Amino acid sequence: MHEGPARLSKLGTVPLKRGMILSNEPGYYKTDHYGIRIENLVLVIEAPSVAGAEKPLNAFETLTLAPIDRRLVKPDMLNPEEVRWLDRYHARVAAALAPLLDPPTLAWLKAATAPIGAG
Image (spheres, rainbow, N blue to C red):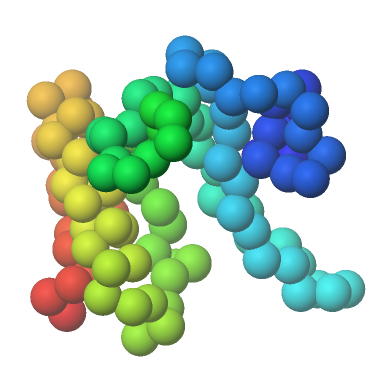
């Protein structure tokens, strides 16, 4: 999240407030070759309470529902929690979009969102 005014950065000066929408843009850049960026929008929401927290916390809810291109993913480089996150995200994408799609597009979505955790 590098665009202001609100951002998660040392340059950020605007406090995050519930209801704000920000972009989450992790990327990898190989100098003089290419760059890859996955971009999702996230909503600032109230986080579940944490014992011992000094004040209420915020969390992020992903709003963008599009499959992450599996060509960008090397499953053997992910830890188990990252695999679970990707599989849960893809399950959410499939559940939300499947009822809206024609059969050929639905077949593509099922392939694009198939779990990587089992394979």
